[in-house]
Amino acid sequence: MNRSLVTIADHSREKIEYLIRMAEEFERHPNRLLLQGRVVATLFFEPSTRTRLSFETAANRLGARVIGFADPKVTSGTKGETLKDTIMMVSNYADVIVMRHYLEGAARYASEIAPVPIINAGDGANQHPSQTMLDLYTIYQTQGTLENLNIYLVGDLKYGRTVHSLLMAMRHFNPTFHFIAPEELAMPEYYKDYCRQHDIRYVEHQDFDKDVIAGADILYMTRVQRERFTDLMEYERVKDRYLLKLDMLSKARRNMRILHPLPRVNEIEYAIDDDPHAYYFQQARNGLFARQAIICDTLGITLEQVKADTSILP
Amino acid sequence: MKRQELIVSALDHGTVIDHIPCDRLFQVINLLHLDEMTSKVTIGYNLRSQKMGTKSIIKIADRFFTDEELNQLSVVAPNVTLTIIRDYEVVEKRSVSLPDELRGIVRCDNPKCITNNEPMSTLFHATDKERGVIQCHYCNHEQQIKQVKLV
Image (cartoon, rainbow over all chains, first blue to last red):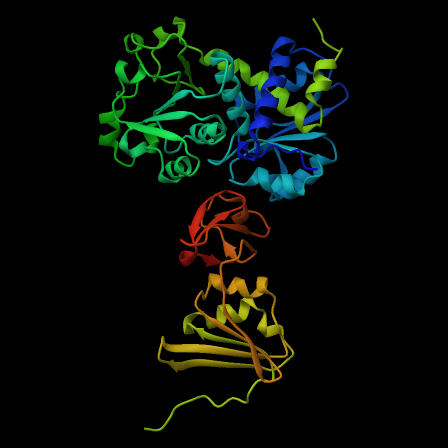
């Protein structure tokens, strides 16, 4: 059985809830020797320091050894080696391969040829399931449930792969989505079709103010990037409309939490960092526990084994 | 007026593919690997057709194709008519339909897809047969079947 994690869409509701319970165990005790003697490879065909450090910390804190590369310039790919050859070679050394690739579908292909499980740490604009897992874990942690939530997605909804994956993963939990984006970066028809097919309610807004925010349980912010616009006049016109300012939170629900996949530039005012609604740094920290759960699951370690684990370190 | 028709000896055993658009004839030949056949193949090109103006037709003796093989034709010539003949009798007349999977036939239109950058076979799933939409198994990009390019 192939235990790879390529896309969150492959996971059932039960599997998502199972991984959340496993992440909870790791949040309680992140330092263990559960993976002592194992080797985790991190192959970053495209640099991504944040994701790589998170995966490597997850592996290291469980006692695994980590091999790999952070920059494709040092690999034989630059000599014309195929992805297949690189994956087959590393499969000889490692028990699991975490890979980030600039080409879409690279992780799916690797999972079909590799004798060891593959964890997709991002393949181009396609999928980034460990980000989705940590988002789901964070939503669960802050709301106590994944059911019946009002999730507001703000900013770049056209190219933002994290919002697309989150939308698909939430289909199991009866959410209501609110899409808040400039016209040029609106949620693509494909995903609105997806919502209709899966009975996911959604509302579209162009305004972003305290009255809109008042209905949110989760406010998921993303970055509006200049290079996404074909019309720079349009960018200048809308760039400040999707910035979150402290006074916009005056009507927010008590349970509302602000998430952001980071890095942030200016879309969340720094004054908000100390507000109880801000949760993006805890969210990034949850990446560690979510990735510990993902690595263990792909290696065939069960929740029961994690609960029975006696190798916990202080 | 003199009748114009192609005189071909009747097929006793085999498959007839009719109503092939002329500009797709050679793609059909390639898809079914007719160039590698050893049995008799008759090809009519630029024939008159009431329905389509001009058409092409292929008669293949002593060869019956699987549904999977024939359904691949739906990518290049969705409106062909197939006739299966055994002992001079027409035993089946049918059309082709988009199969659930297309392996190694269609090229992905996403330049950043792994299949366009690695020596490997492409794979598509038919996600909406009515509207003719196929989705790349690898990068998830969707394409209209009418607009595909072949590998």
